Amino acid sequence: MTTAQIISVVIFVVVMTLIVSEKIHRTTAALCGAVALILFGILDFDTGVEHIDFNTLGVLVGMMLFVGVVKGSGIFEYLAIKSAKLVRGNPWLIMLSFTLITAVLSALLDNVTTILLIGPVTYTVCKLLLDINPIPFFVTEILASNIGGTATLIGDPPNIMIGSAADLSFFDFIIYDAPAVVIIMAAVCVLFYFMYGRKLGVSDDKREAVMHLVEADAIHDKSLFRKSVVMIIIVAAAFVTHGFFHIEPSVIALAAAGIMLVISGADMEKTIREVEWTTIGFFAGLFVVVGGMAETGVIQMMAEGMMDLTGGDLLLSLIILVWASAIISSILDNIPLVATLIPIITTMGASGVDIAPLWWAISLGACLGGCGTLIGASANVVMASISERHGFPLSFMEYTKVGFPIMIFCTAIACVYLVVRFVVLA
Image (cartoon, rainbow, N blue to C red; front, side, top):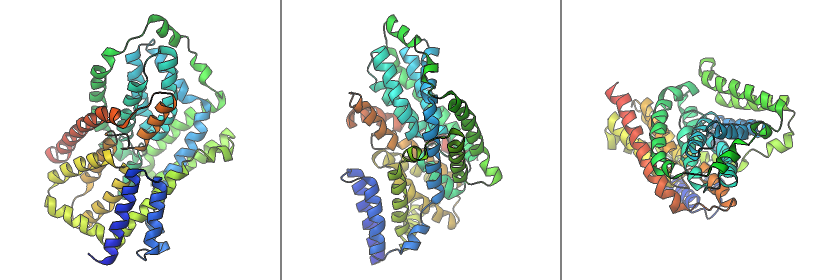
């Protein structure tokens, strides 16, 4: 290896180590890594910027702004209370309905935003009304957010990155990822029943308290509520069809945010604070760090190593990628993993390998792998913070005892699905 290659790899490893150890904030680690590459002369500033995927950043900023306005209507609290009343306060059915709502919203919005909205409502229903431990509910919602977010282009950041790199549409993810997610979600809900459902029970007066909730009271702004419902439907339809009209997902997300800001009359300064700028900075820095390895030829070497290992065999490539992506994502944030894998697969494609099925292997593997531990995905950390803030700390091991086996279970189903779809039925 050349000196430049060694430096780029060392910087990448140091950044990843700092992210995992959480000694400093992950955004600080990524941005320092990007600056280090420039200072060592591995990249110049303009070349580093060229490696930033602004389509991915545009989708994230647009959807964060959009949800920042929409949530002011109370639409998410309304959905939670409505679902609890529809099942007449039955705790298992409440868990099931909240789990499914989390999965669906994570597919249509993003899993971090969904967790931020559903978590406090779950606590209210569980502790203040039913007087039961909310941690099992939080755990199932963490898992549902990761599984549901796997289904669509915008549900989980890795899918946004994959869609942008491979020029895949929202509809492509519905065709290839969503069927696997439906199967996995159904199987996991059965597991939840045997793990938690049979043990849940509350008194009749507690169930009656739920029935006395008035979902209409959760609506803070009726006009904004109606506008939000219409806009969510329009945005979902736009994401589904954007491939037919050759419109970038970032354009749709930013346009939706702009329209909501105009028609809602929302305070721009307040709404702009809803954007997680640290996440945006993390993405930008990480793209540059991975770009350093691409510019020095390290990515090319990794791609050649992958091809040598699999011999170009599709079956072996699918199995290795889905399992490696899942297991690594359970202990390392799936965003840097996918940022590393994308140029490897792109390089393999330039060498004549059919990489179309491989995109779905890393999509399913990386997103489902986030279920494994509390640090596997940002949504997990957010829910753990919500749980602790309400007096119910969720420890790393307490979650991992449940999350890791379920991650293995989900990945096994995904692996079988990929093999059947792209090898057996091809």
